[in-house]
Image (cartoon, rainbow over all chains, first blue to last red; front, side, top):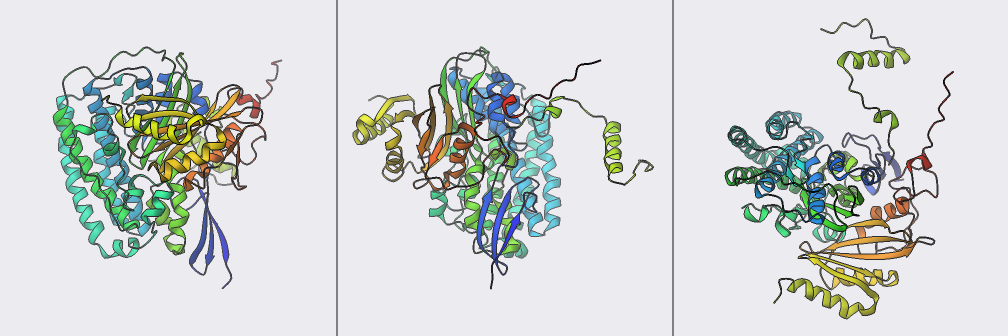
Length: 400
Length: 162
């Protein structure tokens, strides 16, 4: 049979972010796969050099819409290390709290997407309904659902009041109960098993060789977790399990993520009950001395690493970001090869890719720099104009 | 014994093996070691770290503009300690060897060095731009310190108001 090449993406069914895969098919089976990146490069590393350390917190938060706390925490630990600032224990605990809430939020989001790719839309809708609980928690703590911006130089911005603590504990119970239900569902439901077992296989030795990390690596039996291997913040004081699976397939990636979500619920309870009294931040001079630091952080998707170099001014000399997905991409062609075309979206989604994280670093949109918040009417007016130019007139439509 | 016993041991192993090819060796704190190696010994050192010392994970490569030199920082780890290996190359003719033969998943990091710093990576197979767009002006490398946004995207001329 002759082989056919199919370009998949940059717009593709795997996720709503741009990436391109080149697939060579023999019938419906994948003979060879390649990955092309770089559709979403924003120049964040260059931009970070032109902003102050404080401004960079908010810039780096926007590296990713989902692990926003991961990037700022990783960056800020580097800056605080260079500045030799020892932050209060309470601030460390709050950082861990937000980190684990974020992990739940990210893993549930992923579980929903995986269910959707499997074709199990009921599960997708259930999971995303329950995910609202954790988004509400994050809003309660940080004031926003996605970009919580809890970190600041020298600690955190907001404290946890007894009322917030009570509310979080209540919601974590709901989340844990629901996640346990999904664990049973995802590991026993025949349709889930049929779509995930022995799909997208990545053997352990290959996972090591390719530098795979996070839940993707752990599902291939790699017992690597920065929280355990090199404990930062207060992770050395917490009791939680490092979850691995040895099936090396999409099924393993599902299992690892749902069980990790349960562990995160445990961590959150421990942190809330531990929360030491004291201040939530210390003053750190805006000018950070010369020096360099490199730190790792276990983001929901895996190992996040930041390098920061200070030059004695209030702006960094260099900030380097490597998000976990970039290290996991190179494993995807290996997972796809030998598999079936119909499984492609699921296998891609199974590494929980985040394109904006990977392509972080150049083109500033000058039009967007003109910061303007559109009102609903303006947005609607713009929409009507947009479609009018394309020959459709929506101006007569009345919105109720 | 000092509390940096493990770090001292790692330092000694590397110095025994590479001796004079290493410079600027510092133990910054627990779990953090930094050193500079001559570019021609870079791949040997990566191979030694990978197969003899269990530093089998290259977290990332950080490109650096040091003025007269460009540099690449290879952050290798055994999951507990990070050894950062620096390799410097002159700005006029920046060339470094690829470490893909040792760490297979590093292609995108090396392409970043080529695109953003203009360091030629010897042994890297030809491929597309990453992460810059295909039509980015050739010869421009945005993360070099002398690069300005207007080099690639000139300000549109402002018309005089009449």
